[in-house]
Image (cartoon, rainbow, N blue to C red; front, side, top):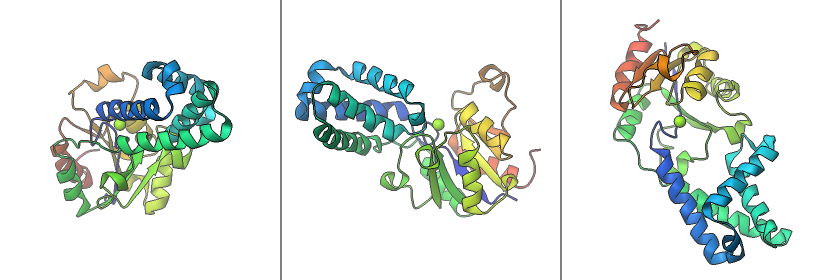
Length: 240
Ligand SMILES: [Mg+2]
């Protein structure tokens, strides 16, 4: 019997690239106005590369997308001559601009309907490697709880976030379905801890072509509207 449904967020409930591109533009515009010494030396692209360099030099930040971005902005500011205090202050303000804009997502067509439908029967939780905030986005009325890699300290597909969800909901792995778009982060990660899985596969890609070495999901959806039926079938034991 299914008791909990966990959802990936980015690229499962909305398209993520456009919102990140827009948030990075907002961040850059803000820096241009408030920290021109930085934007005189760094383009948006070179800031992105700088951030990747910070990530490579600090493996501990790999699981913490918010801390990484904040730290990268601060190091950027120090690099162009800000002192530590000013860099810390400006980096926090700049990060807040990014973070706010990053929540301005446009849901896929059936996102709200599906959450609303499943909420009537199951506990719902959000499990994300990113820094989308369900309460700012306005989805906290659907989710009983949400966990992030930043909070847990490890990213999916590592088992930590999935196991934390079991703990939090006080359910067993076989009572959970995880729904997500990423073959490794979502499907492999969740099935390795014993969850049922639904692969959100909008492109109707072939699982074998996408990931020849991974065991397939319990079920797959080409449109979010298919999810309630798939959940019901898994719940009644039609998939083994
Ligand atoms: Mg995703």
